[in-house]
Length: 118
Image 1: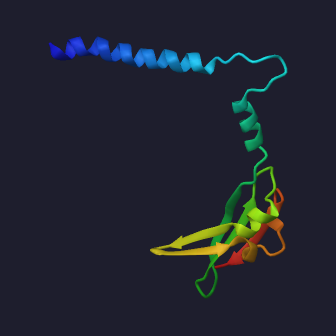
Image 2 (image 1 turned 90 degrees about the horizontal axis):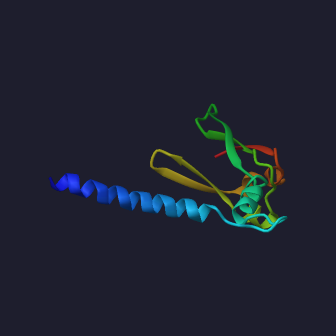
């Protein structure tokens, strides 16, 4: 009997939060204005995105990686200089400076590619 009476109360609370979240999404803007959320999404489309393109072991069993900037944006000189690439194999973790991995700055530009040996 207690479960039956609690169910309508729980449903009321859930629906109240749901309707509140819908109300918050409908924001009035003036013509020509871009809501902040959409502006942030537009900026995200132009960010760099470093991904591991391939990984392999050489004849000495050293881990080799090929990194690619698959994003549409570039990396600033400061970010490139201060960034690290973290490689973990088993319980061992190695942080490698991006500036040492990519001394010529190929990854700074969209589509840039660099291979290195850990």
